[in-house]
Every structure is written in structure tokens, then in C-alpha cells.
Image (cartoon, rainbow, N blue to C red):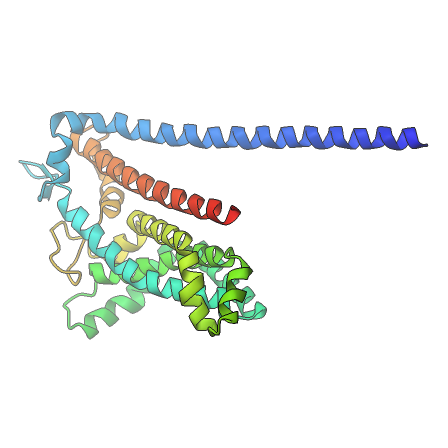
Length: 306
């Protein structure tokens, strides 16, 4: 009887080891596939960008101030789209960062279990809503409201687009910031309260600094989402191919430029290649932003493992 139990234990151990090896292999394969896909995307962008890079040069495009791709003397300056992207992204971050962090503090430190459950469900639902829906809401509600409040001839501005993009980015910042605060050890909370701090003092003196790496990663990922947003800005930013000197002017972002003009250009032509260069610039920016965010987040994980 004892021998049978021993053989059964050995069999279970063998099965567990086999399952562990299979799981590790699958995870490794999936990770390498993701890396290969990412490298393939980069190679595809570079291949289609070569014509423009060779004929115009990267700096000529990135620093160029005029975007007239269909004129007799075509100009392919990215500066109007770059400035438009900066305005929209800056407005979006000014909205979503403070509201997102405050909402994360409330959910992590003050909300009861029922409110936290409902709140996280709403956040997940917001993250799942297609951005085109927020664009429709912005066109219907925000565009006339902004025009009326600021006495503008049109509410289709970079400011309006920034507000909509900020709402789109809110779920990302709230969710990741709340996870970072939740990961702070309870010993720090108990120590802060034992020293006479109230819950709000504990939150901003202890929890937020302890979770600062995760909050920074959330902001960086929100930044990446704001830069890469397409449909909202295509619908409510005004799409003017000029350098906007104010957020209350019509603007066009790099993503909107690519989305609007890709279907109208000659495949393999110079204009087509220039749009791929713009895509390559966006790809590089978002890749670096996500790389920085991931490295900061991993640093926090290692910090709390000690």
C-alpha cells in the first residue's frame, strides 16, 4: 500500500514537472513571436520609408514647416502635425493625469469594497469603448460647448481634441496607478497611521511616494496612448495643415495625417513613402515611451520584492 502511494506521488510530481516545462515553453514561444512581430513591423516601416529618406532626408521632413504634398512644388514638413500632436497630447495629460491619480488614490485607499468593485468595472468598460464613440460624443457635446464658452467660430480645435483624448486615456492611468498603490505593503500604511497620520496624510505622504514608479509608468503609458490616438483627433481637431500657435486653433496630428491621406496617395510614390516615415517616427516615439514605462515598473516590482 505504501509503495502504491509512493508511486502515485512520483507520478504526480512527474506530471507537474512536465506541465511546468510545457507552460514555460509556450510562454517563451509566445514572447519570441511577439518580439519577431515587433521587429517585422519596424522592418516593414523602414522598407517603405527608404524612398523618402533617400530623396528628402529625415531632418528635412521632421523639421520642415510646410505640408503641401499635392502642390506643384510639394513640401513634406512634419512640423504642423508635430505641433498639433504636442498640443493635443499636452491638453490630454493636463486633464487625465491629475484626475487619474486622484481617482486611483480614492479607489485604493478610501473606497469600500463595493464602490471599488463598481469603480473598477466602470474603468474597464471605459477602456473597452471604441475611441470613435468618444469622438462622436465630442462632436455632439464638446465642440459646440467649447465654441460657445471661448467665443470661437468653430469648436473643432486642438483643445477639444485634447479633452476627448484625455478621457480616452483616463482608464489606463487610473488602472495602472491603482495597481501600483495596491502593491504597496500594508506595513507602510499601518506605520503611517500609528504615527498619528490620518488616511489622507498617509496617502500623499506614504502611498503616493512609495508607488511613484508605478504612477510614472501609468503616466508614460497614458502619454503613449495620447500620442497614438487617431479617430478622436481626426473627428474633432479640425485637421488644418498649419502650425497651430494656440490650442484653440484647428490642428492636425501625425496619426490623423496618416489616417486621412494614406488611402488617397499613389502606392509606392514619394507621398506614400513620406507617410511611412511619419509612421516610423510615431512607432519610435511610442516604443521608447513604453520601454521607459516598463523599465520603471519593473524597478518598482524589484523594489518591493526585497
